Length: 253
View (cartoon, rainbow, N blue to C red):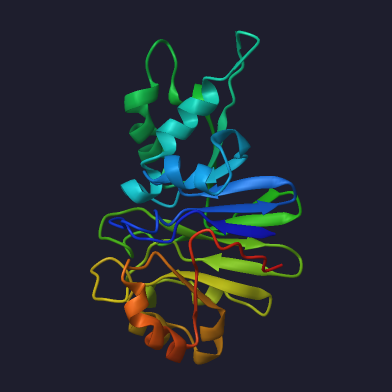
């Protein structure tokens, strides 16, 4: 498995692109979120829209979904030898988010006799329901109301027989999540959003360290952080966590 951080920054980042990822496994390419910087971060990483096999959307903030429409449209409006050869986009989403996501896309895609389902195949997942991609299992972790009040959101767990990763998505109220319950002896990494200053919708470093047992701190990969992260190098070192860096490939298992 290869994890490629297209970006690691928050919504207002100027230097790190939005916190979106490519995960390659079993010859498949899974895109984690599609923010508005995707049109730049994806080609900068050597990928294009046509390479994507699956897209997971965690929630509907623009830094996670603002680039989805362009991706979907570009894949659909493909031509070979002058003939329209559309590629539908397979989108994985928590079942509670599906109606809102369809409505979001409807404004641009539902016209000229076509609807959203002409462009996309949706895979809505319930809590605890695993979707198989080759030898890997993908399951969603509901974080609704725990990132922002009234907002449907989700993280995920991606597992093989021998190892897995837990991905928090965006979350503030960690104590009300079951993220650490997703961690087991086969977990090799916890991708956790961390704000290094006070933030009303993202957990701070101190909140993260208090939530996870000390024994798990070394498995935490900090993401979705402030552009001035260099100011907190010493705090990161002392916390014994790792920093995900833009375009730095991770091969965890």
